[in-house]
Image 1 (cartoon, one colour):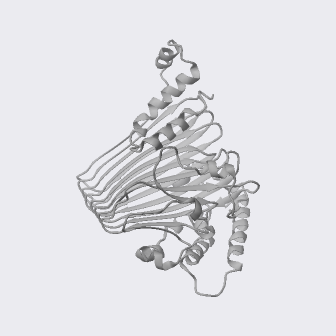
Image 2: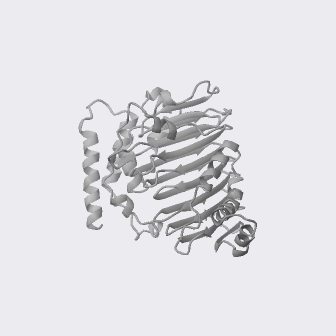
Image 3: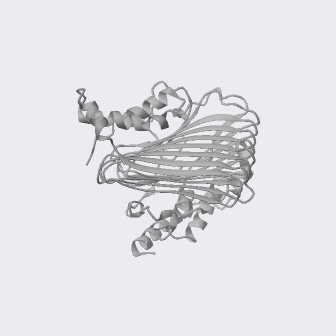
Length: 441
């Protein structure tokens, strides 16, 4: 560990210690125990670096050079905060709003939830969390790396979503996370836990945002468990501030005949990394992962996906695309692992990248690790530039160069966005893509 990392470790160890100094001697509640588990894990790890294969292409300097401090919840909201956290136009959802890592009941909308569906803050009484208590108590996701341990140690709240057997969410549930850092570089550590019992189905939308030029870190820890025949459609929209860092660790466990469909959109932030792990533990489970990431000058955007086929006759699809501008850098690391007993697996991944600048960089690494002998698996990747003839065609019809680039970017992204079944959300994302700078060499 280099000297800068040593200094960062000491700083965070001090911050974590201060979080526990005023803790009373009464028996620990669930939230406090989860934080203590994170503290213990943090003290026994080093920060990841390029010597580790999973972090080979990801520099952590952006995270380690800042003196992030835990976000302090604000009591009042101003006009700008209200605007940033406002619902997307035309989007009808149940809503959960977190500001500075604290559940805001007055800004949320959970009235008239269907029977069999519960949505609770981790700070609420544990009796309301009883359906998932054993799972929460046995979770080990904080041990994945030192950043997940840090997130667990510093979290001040989280959200638990649980659906009973055969329960159905009649409209999407939106989880909106906003960081308001005006002076300090703060760290927000959301914890998201989603549990669908047998036969349950739901649509989940996550949005992450912050003030335009603020420096902050969203350090997200998320666990999803899908019991037999459960179905989840999952949208994630990362639209952080221009100087923000966003780190997500997402773990999905699928059981027999469950279905998981995800659209991961990483569109804004100075430094973004998502680590997604899907464990297919039951026969006939299916997952479909689509995603789009963008980069601009000086920014980094990473996607790391592991799909682990542990059971036979499962099907998985990964399809990610990147729009690469300026002097930014992107990483796609997609992996499919097929265990010896996972016969008749059907798995495929693809990654396509459109270079809009000669200075942009992408490291793409699709991988197959197969131990079974009766499978259908494949992978592929492409890196290319805009076709000059297409650009000329648009320009010859009186379209400006900037608009021509935007049209072509939109066309490149369209087959990913077509996976979005929610019209208002898709329209919102399309407007974000259209706002990208054109041809930023």
